[in-house]
Image (cartoon, rainbow, N blue to C red; front, side, top):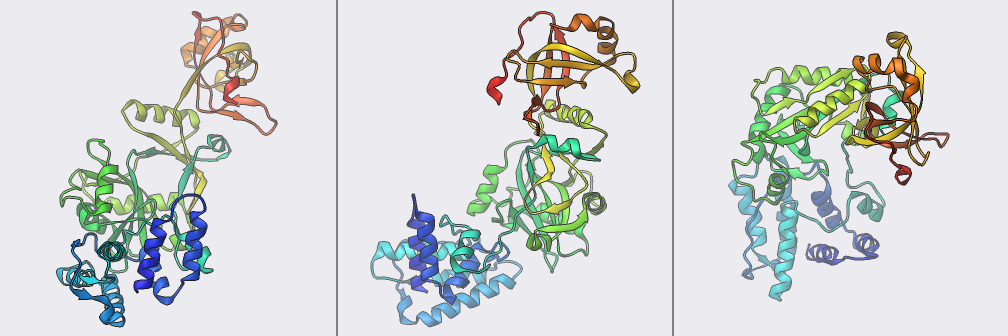
Length: 446
């Protein structure tokens, strides 16, 4: 095992241009059964050692690895397998891990300490040698390390226009966490990057999720970890990852759950159950929890159109929230998906009114909206949203007089359509600006 530990020390020391290829070469040329086993421990997110902190003396130990390296390897593997199967790392298991760290590997103290530190990182899954599952698998020529992902949102807000239904969910300002319900009913927590979080530091949330899951197994809850007082939790999560978190670190945590999915989807990459079915299941599961539970059902609204979604967005942001994510009735995909769209920050601009068009339906007899452009003529946009009943009543009789005036407009993002026409996504009328005669030049946005 000494050779493998030395290779990992080399990997950790490689930085700069070309380092990724050199790391792949090192792994490929030194691949042994022992190396594959250690790689799986370190990088397989579904392998847990449950050891989150060990003590390492900087003094060189008296016990010598070279006296019986075969016995050391056997002890190491036996410990890892026992840890995998244990519900938690008890004092006996931690003691066996400390025994392994109390070996001297080489005669030079500084080098020996470096090797023992590497062993400690392996035992506690703290390995970070700057290479991920994809490159490791490429280096060894097979899919040794699972490379799961969670579903992620895009910024392509124009996609929403194509949807038949819109489900608007609150976007929470916290840390993305998934909670996997194992075969025994125990809960394992992972970050978006699939770094495991010590479940003992999330005990309150774990207890509540066990109540919610009941007898269900092989599922995971997807959500955002936040704080009661809307304070940042990223620093606390970092403490948990580093093994330095206090016992009561979760006392103010909230877990805002917005999805429940079969764990198999993490392997297959794509589910088969539609969003509306998953949402109903999630609502049913969490309904057994008290209203003041630290596990909450993420807020969701089914809306008719984007104007309604934007009203919810504004209400949440004005209340100090993060915003919203719009979703359609989709299956869960372990990638960045066009079925989840983030509503971005609202922007303002002043545009020149060049025309108007007639209203239809509820707006029959009134203007339907305004046709506007910017100072440079770059943007040409029809604005039909944002008008109040009072606006329509006041502006419709003087529609011709509006031409040449300036309209204050809100929008989300500048867009270019398939015909290369430049416009704005979701423009909303705010007011006619009688105090201004020049439109904004928006050419720099394209």
